[in-house]
Amino acid sequence: MKCPFCNKDYLTQEEVMNCIINHIHESQEEQAKQLQRLYLMLMSSQLTMASLATHSSARDVVERFGEIYELLENLVQKPDVVTEIEKWLKDKEA
Image (tube, rainbow, N blue to C red; front, side, top):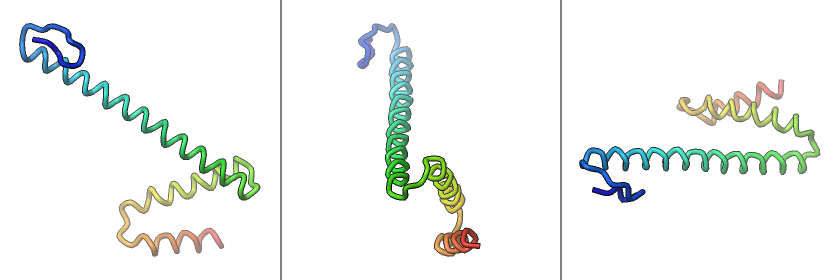
């Protein structure tokens, strides 16, 4: 029996299935890495544009990004997102 991915010969169906599962896991890991790279590129682009548009330092833009990211992470479990954002904005004004 042969693995359909790498054409390696195996004696049992179980060995073939293990090889296929390994190929699938490797593919998933590679996809996760590629997705992470894509997210980092998008984030870099957005942070660069924010820095240029606001004439702020990269440090200030990244710091603000961190604050907003933390807010959004905390909102995932909240039932009333709008109220939480309004509260956050009022706290930032003070």
